[in-house]
Amino acid sequence: MPNAICIGELLIDFVSTTTDVTLAECPGFTKAPGGAPANVAVGLAKLGVESGFIGKVGDEPFGDFLRGTLEGYHVDTSYLISGTGCRTTLAFVSTRSDGAKDIAFYRNPGADTLLTVDEIDETYIQSADLFHYGSVSLSHQPSRDATLKAIHAAKESDAFMSYDPNLRLMLWDTPEDARHWIWEVMPYANVVKAAEEEWEFITGTSELEGGSQRILGIGVDLVVVTRGEHGCYYNNGVDQGEVDGFPVEVVDPLGAGDGFVAAMLTQMMCTFGKVREPLLLDAHQLRSIMRYANAAGALTTQKIGVIPALPTPSEIEAFLKNSA
Image (cartoon, rainbow, N blue to C red; front, side, top):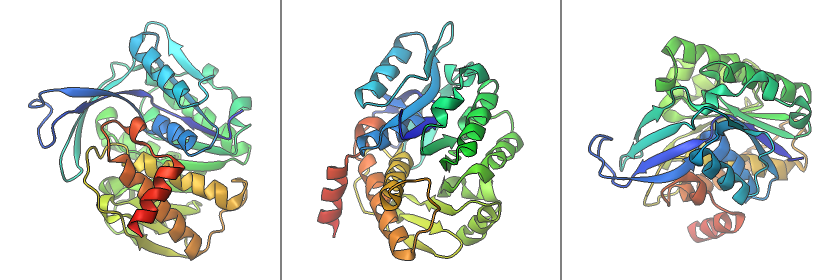
Protein backbone atom coordinates (compact mmCIF):
# COMPACT_ATOMS: atom_id res chain seq x y z
CA MET A 1 0.00 0.00 0.00
CA PRO A 2 1.34 3.48 -0.86
CA ASN A 3 2.26 6.01 1.83
CA ALA A 4 0.70 8.86 -0.15
CA ILE A 5 -2.45 8.91 -2.27
CA CYS A 6 -3.59 11.60 -4.69
CA ILE A 7 -7.03 11.87 -6.28
CA GLY A 8 -8.30 13.87 -9.24
CA GLU A 9 -7.69 14.53 -12.89
CA LEU A 10 -5.22 12.77 -15.16
CA LEU A 11 -5.19 14.10 -18.71
CA ILE A 12 -3.14 14.91 -21.78
CA ASP A 13 -1.60 18.38 -22.03
CA PHE A 14 -0.87 19.53 -25.56
CA VAL A 15 1.67 22.26 -24.84
CA SER A 16 2.44 24.97 -27.40
CA THR A 17 5.85 24.60 -29.00
CA THR A 18 6.03 28.41 -29.24
CA THR A 19 5.72 30.95 -26.43
CA ASP A 20 3.85 34.25 -26.56
CA VAL A 21 1.28 33.15 -29.12
CA THR A 22 -2.42 32.45 -28.72
CA LEU A 23 -3.82 28.97 -29.04
CA ALA A 24 -5.23 29.96 -32.43
CA GLU A 25 -1.81 31.11 -33.63
CA CYS A 26 0.19 28.21 -32.21
CA PRO A 27 1.94 26.28 -35.02
CA GLY A 28 2.27 23.02 -33.06
CA PHE A 29 1.96 21.21 -29.75
CA THR A 30 3.93 18.70 -27.71
CA LYS A 31 1.95 15.89 -26.10
CA ALA A 32 2.60 15.55 -22.35
CA PRO A 33 0.89 13.71 -19.49
CA GLY A 34 -0.70 16.09 -16.99
CA GLY A 35 -3.33 16.82 -14.37
CA ALA A 36 -2.30 18.50 -11.13
CA PRO A 37 -2.99 15.66 -8.63
CA ALA A 38 -1.36 13.12 -10.95
CA ASN A 39 1.65 15.40 -11.31
CA VAL A 40 1.96 15.50 -7.52
CA ALA A 41 1.72 11.70 -7.33
CA VAL A 42 4.62 11.36 -9.79
CA GLY A 43 6.53 14.17 -8.07
CA LEU A 44 6.28 12.33 -4.76
CA ALA A 45 7.38 9.06 -6.37
CA LYS A 46 10.39 10.70 -8.01
CA LEU A 47 11.35 12.07 -4.59
CA GLY A 48 11.25 8.63 -3.00
CA VAL A 49 7.71 8.50 -1.55
CA GLU A 50 5.56 5.46 -2.36
CA SER A 51 2.51 7.04 -3.98
CA GLY A 52 -0.76 5.99 -5.56
CA PHE A 53 -3.28 7.74 -7.78
CA ILE A 54 -7.08 7.50 -7.88
CA GLY A 55 -8.86 8.68 -11.02
CA LYS A 56 -10.36 7.69 -14.34
CA VAL A 57 -9.12 7.77 -17.94
CA GLY A 58 -10.64 6.54 -21.16
CA ASP A 59 -10.26 2.93 -22.28
CA GLU A 60 -8.40 4.12 -25.38
CA PRO A 61 -4.86 4.98 -26.50
CA PHE A 62 -4.60 8.25 -24.52
CA GLY A 63 -5.72 6.47 -21.35
CA ASP A 64 -3.25 3.66 -21.98
CA PHE A 65 -0.48 6.25 -22.45
CA LEU A 66 -1.29 7.91 -19.14
CA ARG A 67 -1.48 4.64 -17.21
CA GLY A 68 1.86 3.58 -18.67
CA THR A 69 3.37 6.93 -17.74
CA LEU A 70 2.36 6.67 -14.07
CA GLU A 71 3.49 3.07 -13.86
CA GLY A 72 6.79 4.02 -15.46
CA TYR A 73 7.43 6.29 -12.48
CA HIS A 74 6.31 3.59 -10.02
CA VAL A 75 3.03 5.24 -9.05
CA ASP A 76 0.46 2.65 -7.94
CA THR A 77 -2.43 2.58 -10.45
CA SER A 78 -4.58 -0.06 -8.77
CA TYR A 79 -7.41 2.49 -8.57
CA LEU A 80 -6.86 4.28 -11.86
CA ILE A 81 -10.03 3.21 -13.67
CA SER A 82 -10.20 2.79 -17.44
CA GLY A 83 -13.73 3.83 -18.31
CA THR A 84 -15.45 2.01 -21.17
CA GLY A 85 -17.09 4.34 -23.66
CA CYS A 86 -15.54 7.54 -22.32
CA ARG A 87 -12.58 9.58 -23.47
CA THR A 88 -9.57 10.98 -21.68
CA THR A 89 -9.69 14.74 -21.09
CA LEU A 90 -7.37 16.83 -23.29
CA ALA A 91 -5.98 20.29 -22.51
CA PHE A 92 -4.38 22.60 -25.05
CA VAL A 93 -1.96 25.02 -23.43
CA SER A 94 -0.19 28.14 -24.71
CA THR A 95 2.34 29.86 -22.47
CA ARG A 96 3.82 33.33 -22.27
CA SER A 97 7.33 34.29 -21.27
CA ASP A 98 5.94 35.96 -18.14
CA GLY A 99 4.65 32.61 -16.93
CA ALA A 100 0.96 33.18 -17.72
CA LYS A 101 -0.89 30.53 -19.70
CA ASP A 102 -4.06 30.03 -21.73
CA ILE A 103 -5.77 26.65 -21.48
CA ALA A 104 -8.62 25.14 -23.49
CA PHE A 105 -10.04 21.86 -22.16
CA TYR A 106 -11.72 19.17 -24.26
CA ARG A 107 -13.86 17.39 -21.68
CA ASN A 108 -17.31 16.60 -23.00
CA PRO A 109 -17.53 14.93 -20.57
CA GLY A 110 -13.99 13.81 -19.82
CA ALA A 111 -13.29 10.46 -18.23
CA ASP A 112 -11.94 12.19 -15.12
CA THR A 113 -15.43 13.54 -14.32
CA LEU A 114 -16.97 10.05 -14.49
CA LEU A 115 -15.26 8.51 -11.45
CA THR A 116 -18.04 7.12 -9.25
CA VAL A 117 -18.58 6.62 -5.53
CA ASP A 118 -18.57 2.84 -6.04
CA GLU A 119 -15.03 3.07 -7.45
CA ILE A 120 -13.64 4.57 -4.21
CA ASP A 121 -12.04 1.99 -1.91
CA GLU A 122 -11.97 3.45 1.60
CA THR A 123 -9.61 0.75 2.89
CA TYR A 124 -7.03 1.67 0.25
CA ILE A 125 -7.27 5.36 1.13
CA GLN A 126 -7.11 4.79 4.87
CA SER A 127 -3.86 2.85 4.57
CA ALA A 128 -1.99 6.03 3.54
CA ASP A 129 -0.34 8.61 5.76
CA LEU A 130 -0.79 11.44 3.26
CA PHE A 131 -3.80 12.35 1.11
CA HIS A 132 -3.67 15.07 -1.56
CA TYR A 133 -6.65 16.49 -3.46
CA GLY A 134 -7.71 19.42 -5.64
CA SER A 135 -10.94 21.07 -6.74
CA VAL A 136 -11.17 20.16 -10.44
CA SER A 137 -12.72 16.77 -9.67
CA LEU A 138 -15.46 18.60 -7.72
CA SER A 139 -16.67 20.55 -10.74
CA HIS A 140 -19.13 17.91 -11.99
CA GLN A 141 -20.89 14.74 -10.97
CA PRO A 142 -20.29 11.87 -10.41
CA SER A 143 -16.63 12.68 -9.65
CA ARG A 144 -17.70 15.27 -7.06
CA ASP A 145 -19.35 12.69 -4.83
CA ALA A 146 -16.49 10.25 -5.41
CA THR A 147 -13.94 12.87 -4.36
CA LEU A 148 -15.96 13.84 -1.28
CA LYS A 149 -16.18 10.19 -0.23
CA ALA A 150 -12.41 9.86 -0.57
CA ILE A 151 -11.73 13.08 1.39
CA HIS A 152 -14.00 11.96 4.22
CA ALA A 153 -12.37 8.52 4.34
CA ALA A 154 -8.87 10.01 4.53
CA LYS A 155 -9.86 12.49 7.21
CA GLU A 156 -11.46 9.75 9.32
CA SER A 157 -8.19 7.80 9.25
CA ASP A 158 -6.25 10.83 10.52
CA ALA A 159 -4.19 11.13 7.33
CA PHE A 160 -2.27 14.33 6.73
CA MET A 161 -4.42 16.27 4.26
CA SER A 162 -2.98 18.43 1.47
CA TYR A 163 -5.17 20.62 -0.77
CA ASP A 164 -4.36 22.60 -3.91
CA PRO A 165 -7.52 24.36 -5.20
CA ASN A 166 -5.92 24.67 -8.67
CA LEU A 167 -8.61 27.03 -9.97
CA ARG A 168 -9.70 26.32 -13.56
CA LEU A 169 -12.78 28.49 -13.95
CA MET A 170 -13.53 27.32 -17.50
CA LEU A 171 -14.34 23.86 -16.12
CA TRP A 172 -17.07 25.10 -13.78
CA ASP A 173 -20.65 25.96 -14.65
CA THR A 174 -20.42 29.28 -12.79
CA PRO A 175 -17.78 31.15 -10.75
CA GLU A 176 -20.07 30.95 -7.74
CA ASP A 177 -20.17 27.17 -8.03
CA ALA A 178 -16.38 27.05 -8.15
CA ARG A 179 -15.97 29.28 -5.10
CA HIS A 180 -18.55 27.29 -3.11
CA TRP A 181 -16.92 23.90 -3.65
CA ILE A 182 -13.38 25.20 -3.27
CA TRP A 183 -14.30 26.37 0.22
CA GLU A 184 -16.48 23.35 0.98
CA VAL A 185 -13.44 21.05 1.12
CA MET A 186 -10.97 23.58 2.56
CA PRO A 187 -11.56 22.74 6.27
CA TYR A 188 -10.43 19.13 5.76
CA ALA A 189 -6.90 20.21 4.85
CA ASN A 190 -3.86 20.49 7.10
CA VAL A 191 -1.96 22.42 4.44
CA VAL A 192 -3.42 24.49 1.60
CA LYS A 193 -1.29 25.61 -1.34
CA ALA A 194 -2.71 28.22 -3.72
CA ALA A 195 -1.21 30.16 -6.60
CA GLU A 196 -1.01 33.94 -6.39
CA GLU A 197 -3.01 34.40 -9.61
CA GLU A 198 -6.03 32.61 -8.07
CA TRP A 199 -5.65 34.09 -4.58
CA GLU A 200 -8.06 37.01 -4.84
CA PHE A 201 -10.80 34.87 -6.40
CA ILE A 202 -10.50 32.28 -3.66
CA THR A 203 -10.06 34.51 -0.60
CA GLY A 204 -11.78 37.73 -1.66
CA THR A 205 -8.65 39.81 -1.04
CA SER A 206 -5.31 40.41 -2.72
CA GLU A 207 -3.61 40.58 0.69
CA LEU A 208 -1.63 37.44 1.44
CA GLU A 209 -1.81 37.81 5.21
CA GLY A 210 -5.50 38.69 5.27
CA GLY A 211 -6.46 35.87 2.92
CA SER A 212 -4.34 33.31 4.73
CA GLN A 213 -5.82 34.30 8.08
CA ARG A 214 -9.27 33.58 6.65
CA ILE A 215 -8.16 30.09 5.66
CA LEU A 216 -6.35 29.46 8.95
CA GLY A 217 -9.52 30.53 10.72
CA ILE A 218 -11.41 27.45 9.51
CA GLY A 219 -8.87 25.05 10.99
CA VAL A 220 -6.13 24.75 8.34
CA ASP A 221 -2.63 24.46 9.88
CA LEU A 222 -0.51 25.98 7.12
CA VAL A 223 -1.25 28.19 4.11
CA VAL A 224 1.26 28.57 1.28
CA VAL A 225 0.99 30.88 -1.73
CA THR A 226 3.25 30.21 -4.70
CA ARG A 227 4.35 33.39 -6.48
CA GLY A 228 6.27 32.22 -9.55
CA GLU A 229 9.70 33.80 -9.87
CA HIS A 230 9.05 35.66 -6.60
CA GLY A 231 9.07 32.44 -4.58
CA CYS A 232 6.38 31.83 -2.00
CA TYR A 233 4.59 33.13 1.08
CA TYR A 234 3.69 30.96 4.08
CA ASN A 235 1.62 31.43 7.23
CA ASN A 236 0.85 28.89 9.96
CA GLY A 237 -0.73 31.35 12.37
CA VAL A 238 2.47 31.71 14.39
CA ASP A 239 5.15 32.31 11.79
CA GLN A 240 4.69 33.91 8.40
CA GLY A 241 7.06 35.14 5.76
CA GLU A 242 8.27 35.12 2.19
CA VAL A 243 10.99 32.92 0.72
CA ASP A 244 12.65 34.13 -2.47
CA GLY A 245 12.45 32.14 -5.66
CA PHE A 246 15.29 31.19 -7.98
CA PRO A 247 15.93 33.06 -11.25
CA VAL A 248 15.80 30.57 -14.13
CA GLU A 249 15.14 30.72 -17.85
CA VAL A 250 11.60 29.34 -18.03
CA VAL A 251 10.87 26.81 -20.77
CA ASP A 252 7.38 25.77 -19.62
CA PRO A 253 5.76 27.17 -16.43
CA LEU A 254 2.96 24.59 -16.41
CA GLY A 255 3.13 22.40 -13.33
CA ALA A 256 5.70 24.38 -11.35
CA GLY A 257 3.22 24.48 -8.48
CA ASP A 258 2.82 20.71 -8.60
CA GLY A 259 6.58 20.25 -8.37
CA PHE A 260 6.53 22.67 -5.43
CA VAL A 261 3.77 20.72 -3.65
CA ALA A 262 5.46 17.33 -4.09
CA ALA A 263 8.75 18.68 -2.72
CA MET A 264 7.06 20.50 0.17
CA LEU A 265 5.11 17.41 1.23
CA THR A 266 8.16 15.17 0.93
CA GLN A 267 10.15 17.50 3.17
CA MET A 268 7.34 17.59 5.72
CA MET A 269 7.25 13.80 5.80
CA CYS A 270 11.02 13.75 6.33
CA THR A 271 10.80 16.38 9.09
CA PHE A 272 8.16 14.51 11.03
CA GLY A 273 9.37 11.01 10.28
CA LYS A 274 5.69 10.11 10.17
CA VAL A 275 3.40 12.63 8.56
CA ARG A 276 0.42 11.92 10.85
CA GLU A 277 2.08 13.83 13.67
CA PRO A 278 0.83 17.38 14.36
CA LEU A 279 2.06 20.14 12.11
CA LEU A 280 4.49 21.82 14.51
CA LEU A 281 7.18 23.52 12.45
CA ASP A 282 9.35 26.36 13.66
CA ALA A 283 10.30 29.29 11.45
CA HIS A 284 13.66 27.79 10.46
CA GLN A 285 12.08 24.49 9.41
CA LEU A 286 9.38 26.25 7.44
CA ARG A 287 11.83 28.42 5.56
CA SER A 288 14.05 25.44 4.79
CA ILE A 289 11.10 23.44 3.45
CA MET A 290 9.88 26.38 1.36
CA ARG A 291 13.32 26.97 -0.14
CA TYR A 292 13.56 23.30 -1.13
CA ALA A 293 10.07 23.45 -2.66
CA ASN A 294 10.92 26.68 -4.53
CA ALA A 295 13.92 24.89 -6.04
CA ALA A 296 11.72 22.01 -7.18
CA GLY A 297 9.24 24.44 -8.72
CA ALA A 298 12.00 26.24 -10.59
CA LEU A 299 13.41 22.97 -11.94
CA THR A 300 9.96 21.91 -13.12
CA THR A 301 9.90 24.88 -15.52
CA GLN A 302 13.02 23.67 -17.34
CA LYS A 303 11.37 21.22 -19.77
CA ILE A 304 8.18 21.05 -21.82
CA GLY A 305 5.70 18.80 -20.04
CA VAL A 306 5.34 18.60 -16.28
CA ILE A 307 6.00 14.95 -15.46
CA PRO A 308 9.32 14.60 -17.30
CA ALA A 309 10.47 17.87 -15.69
CA LEU A 310 9.62 16.94 -12.09
CA PRO A 311 12.97 16.76 -10.27
CA THR A 312 14.71 14.01 -8.32
CA PRO A 313 16.33 14.61 -4.91
CA SER A 314 19.82 14.72 -6.45
CA GLU A 315 18.71 17.32 -9.00
CA ILE A 316 17.22 19.53 -6.28
CA GLU A 317 20.28 19.18 -4.06
CA ALA A 318 22.64 20.03 -6.93
CA PHE A 319 20.50 23.03 -7.86
CA LEU A 320 20.50 24.32 -4.28
CA LYS A 321 24.24 23.81 -3.99
CA ASN A 322 24.87 25.78 -7.18
CA SER A 323 22.46 28.50 -6.02
CA ALA A 324 24.04 28.95 -2.60
